[in-house]
Image (cartoon, rainbow, N blue to C red):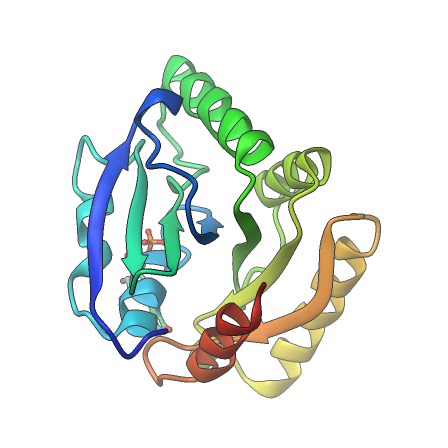
Length: 195
Ligand code: GDP
């Protein structure tokens, strides 16, 4: 699945712009700066693949990438920007809600969580939205190279406790470091085995 070309398909700002739901889909969500672009780039082996989604003006788009001809990898807009105007936040929340609740081919959402910080309130809001949309989500811890084992275990406990009440949460966590290429094979395999 990740051996072939990974092409940017399009950035979407409205439901009318979604590509046809003709293949399996996974999406990536996370607070701004969580390491989402780095992870998507590391995962796909393309250095600048997800950079488009971080350039000004594109941050509110849902970006579609094709994994071969069988899957879409979807980069959702980062959330939790400190200075985002309310109108912008509301617009993207509305689009996100429509996308999550209406996408038949969406098999899993990966919610990225910084391994140093654990789950924050904004993450829980997304998780509740995923619950309501009945989209199974799995937490991916990022930047694990930045913490020691004791701190990591403490955060893992927090994350597990916070996930427990969420019906759509998939219990298994994936620990990653884009920097050290850790957890990437697990994440790729997880995506490849979804049906
Ligand atoms: P995004 O806003 O979620 O797309 O985050 P980015 O991918 O742009 O990463 C935010 C910052 O974290 C950048 O300075 C990255 O270099 C850094 N970063 C991302 N992933 C890792 C990682 O696995 N390890 C370390 N040490 N830094 C990372």
